[in-house]
Length: 247
Ligand SMILES: NC(=O)c1ccc[n+]([C@@H]2O[C@H](COP(=O)([O-])OP(=O)(O)OC[C@H]3O[C@@H](n4cnc5c(N)ncnc54)[C@H](OP(=O)(O)O)[C@@H]3O)[C@@H](O)[C@H]2O)c1
Image 1 (tube, rainbow, N blue to C red):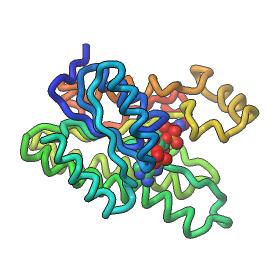
Image 2 (image 1 turned 90 degrees about the horizontal axis):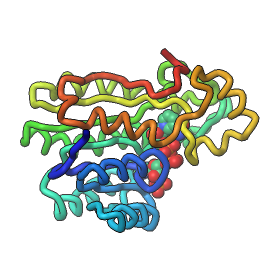
Image 3 (image 1 turned 135 degrees about the horizontal axis):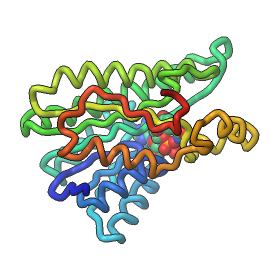
Image 4 (image 1 turned 120 degrees about the horizontal axis):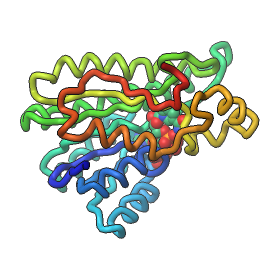
């Protein structure tokens, strides 16, 4: 169904978890994929695996929250590809703590990565999308942006900010045939959720109508849908992929 031949997709946070699966799926459906993360070795390993399976992939090192690194990463991206058609803003971190114990650094690191990073990377990419009158921007937020979560005022603020960013930009670039959407995953089995512990996970499963945590594939399928040319009439939307946790 999906054919991304002759299209370039940039996926941030692609060295593992959701981003890696998204990059693999886009590549297996024909896209040339640029994978970015802070760790050069890990993101190169992910790109190499895609190439070994016959896909086309380029690895770049970048901390999305550091403007200098974003600028230099884009210099090297532009040496290799002429355009980016699909941008998946997936890089994200959590540094959980109760508000009264939260350190400035925990607040700052999360906002810098999840929100400043979104701004820096999207600004670089959208200029080219405007010129070519086509683009798909997909931002990964979270179910907690809708529901709130104790111990996560920093993370939830950043994820709610991503939804606002998505809707504002969707209106700004719609006339250029660029769609901007968000995906709000529920709890997905990745490194981010392994820290939760088995007891918490079991309780969580009980509260999810579909009675399981999500897989990275569940989220990647949503990305394929929103990235498709056929989804050109969907913009400013937040797609819940959460097993029914929040409706
Ligand atoms: N897992 C869940 O249950 C869940 C639920 C809702 C939303 N999400 C969101 O989904 C996204 C992916 O989550 P995940 O569970 O796949 O996380 P993960 O397994 O921890 O992977 C995070 C990815 O982001 C990269 N990254 C982190 N900080 C970065 C930075 N400053 N610059 C560039 N890359 C960075 C990491 O690579 P490096 O460490 O090498 O940089 C890694 O590739 C995040 O935005 C997260 O908030 C996850």
